[in-house]
Image 1 (cartoon, rainbow, N blue to C red):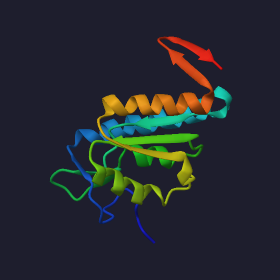
Image 2 (image 1 turned 120 degrees about the vertical axis):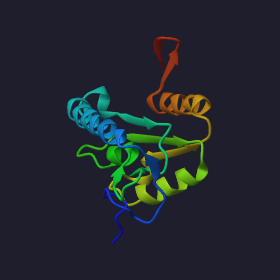
Image 3 (image 1 turned 45 degrees about the horizontal axis):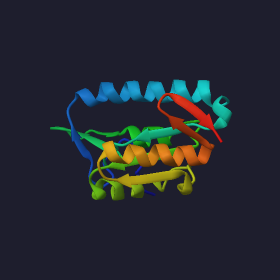
Length: 146
């Protein structure tokens, strides 16, 4: 059995991070837990998790042997999974490592979308994909249903 979804070294590369990332990931986890609990029955049941700076999915604390689940893996390990996930990174190798880890989650793989490239450009792909799925097109700040 692999340890891809555990906060430990799994043999794949991890994003080297400082001690500060512990606090950041603590708050990300709290936000995910609160959001998924509060919104799982709202929004027509549709909830998308978007992380266009996902990295390889795990963090390694610089100067230690400590490994943490990064935000993408935290989002995949929720009690009430999101409807769809959009993970992006500039580096294809990061996406490949994240895919390897994510395929062991309980989330159906066809609900996880991976994008490689500049987040400033890929965000348009995500918006378009969500618009198509929802049948709603965003024009400036107004939502137009079709």
